[in-house]
Length: 217
Image (cartoon, rainbow, N blue to C red):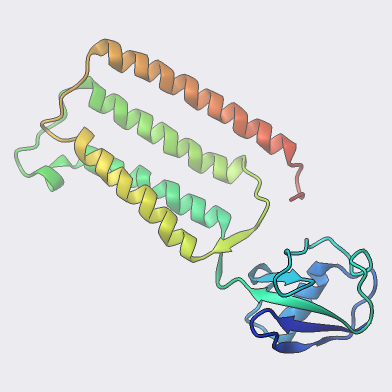
């Protein structure tokens, strides 16, 4: 069975796949496209029936799509990709280290006059921040299941910029020598709310994991 492969950009022909069968899947097509053009690895491809059509799922067969010998498929280049897990780890490791840098080395940011933190709330804030992002890292490694293996590599820079810059903003003010602590009542009520929220968030992530069995997307 022969299937003609075209690029969605200008309908340029990429070549013909002549080793496919009716039972071949879109994943098989992607592997074939990579043989035609090595830079188009499977995660970088969006395979479609029409140039502006929807992306076909990897497990769809040519027969189920009504394709016959001589049919056309269109491939969109999604650009360089990076793994979701890699992006998540970079997003969450940054805030962990940046915040603790402000917390443990205040004199670097506030000058020699900055001494040790004297208010309890600053230590509680550092502990909560550490727990939150350590939890996110561990969930990324052991809990989350991703529907897609990769995302565009530019998302790494956008996402990391968001998390890292806002971390620096928060850490600068909370760890500042002139920071004024709220009342003890506010601090401990907020701490209790934080603990409940983290536990609730973890339980939801476990529930979502169980909705997506291993190996499924």
